[in-house]
Length: 408
Image 1: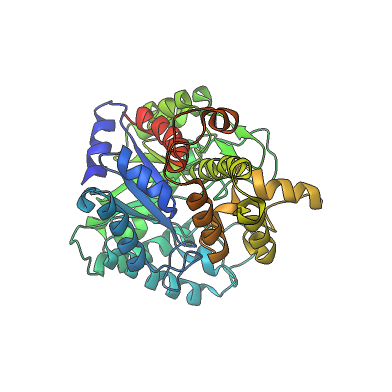
Image 2: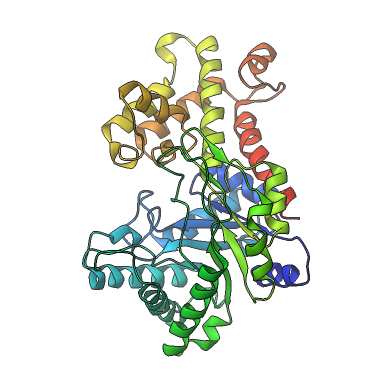
């Protein structure tokens, strides 16, 4: 199992890591497969679950979807590692604990049976009938072990035993909702407690062998991003945290590493943050490429034949505001700006909508398969001698190449 190799390399003192591409976007997945020899592609609980998630896909559907993309570009599917991110009751936080956990059990079962082998057990969120105050770490651990037990008894299609990641998600998934000047690095004593309490919960459930396959723990190394800011990694502030994990059998998983510089990503891997989660930065790059192509289309296509994709996307977001409304603060003009250009890229939830898909198809048809005019590429893309599909690929690849370099 490739994740075991990464952990073993880290324990030998090697700066090796793996980029965890958390996206269901076909362009993003395709470029990931083209660039990485052993790609790790993850689906989140709100993207993909037994009820379809916002993509409309069950875990089995997602596996077949990735398989289809792999076959299209002749990539060996067996080399892909599939991961489930934030698998727990996050989607059902408004329900009583027992109801939410039963749904979580079924979700975990379907993920493992479908062939997902990297499972992030995340039970850090409070549920409807939990008592007031912070959720007790013992409760989090007990719920995580309960889900691990389901995973252990699920009949996996590929017969590969799951590798687990534990730990509370510190950065808000998809980016912060307010501008921040800094975030606190996870304290060593908190990591130590999470490992000890979760190990005990696993043992109580008779899951000693499953504990041997816990490869990582999610911590906050001090990185974050939001609508209009990026907090860069500062190695000196994470030094104590980095040193602690050297004595453990695990590595760290860092979330919200989007928009970090290549050098910062390399330093994260060197400091034992071996699993680097990325998602919004990739769909932001895709959106950026599509908008550039829309500008080129405006110069090349008659008004009544244009895709008007920027307006179509915004109209879809306005009709279905549930994925952005509570995240984008400000007046009407500020929200309109964020819908297009926020680094949190809530627009990523809307490319699956039929109107957006149809507009994208029309845009690509209008621009054709040939190389686009030098002057327009220079003006709107900053590179020349590219066709429309290559413009999109280059944008996504630039983000992915930083991760490939950083992961060694």
